Image (cartoon, rainbow, N blue to C red; front, side, top):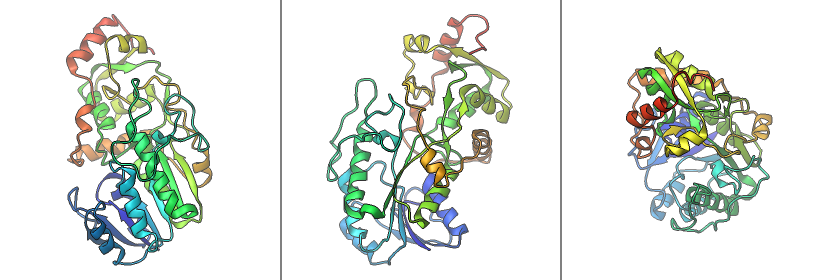
Length: 344
């Protein structure tokens, strides 16, 4: 099996590369060489995927059984289209890492693969789309929907789309789980979003990588929601963070109305918290039937802490700084809860 990974040096791309090498596959990577070293054993090609001449040079480097695109998250559809056209004759399949944000109903409604997508042309530039006043839909979602259309228009039935929600695990660059781990380690009363039994569906980066590789080698087609089928309650998520870090803390559960009154930013100040009904109602049964296997979230928590303790250094990314509530603001809200708010 010969694959080309667009990206391949950090987080999901790195896991895909190392997983492919363990399978004995021949791996070519294409990236700018800025986010980290290429894994030993790959055939690296360095270049800019938005440059037609660099893509032509890549296409001349060989043919592949599959392309796995992990590097289009910040690109407009027209740049995705540029790459697909350049590689259309060189690749038998295209596995595209997309997002649940492409759905018109996210995060308000439960989602399945048949749910309507946002409208965006396959050749749109970075100005297309908008972010709604309540944070949905998102400009990012429009752009990613256009990217899917760019791939579909060139590869048709040879394309597979993976639509993850939240990906966590060792190497995370966004900072969601690392913030919760750091906060648990600090201890004390930890502001937590009620209800405690709210179930969330983060998926481990290693499980997404395995599923992407399986799809590269399969004859399947179409789209798959990639979310944890069982998930974990917020109470067990925080308990897991406290357990692995040895933090002497306990959650102080605050209702959404109180958090809103204190202008706590959903999704960032308390990572993974969002009140919209559909945000954690993603049906991944199709992916599970196709072989998606998700380890317990508790294992992801423990392995991420071990990575951080071993001097884990994520790729520098501006999203990291956006996550986490200021200690003074947290303390003020916790104090407003009064005595014991440890029950959600």
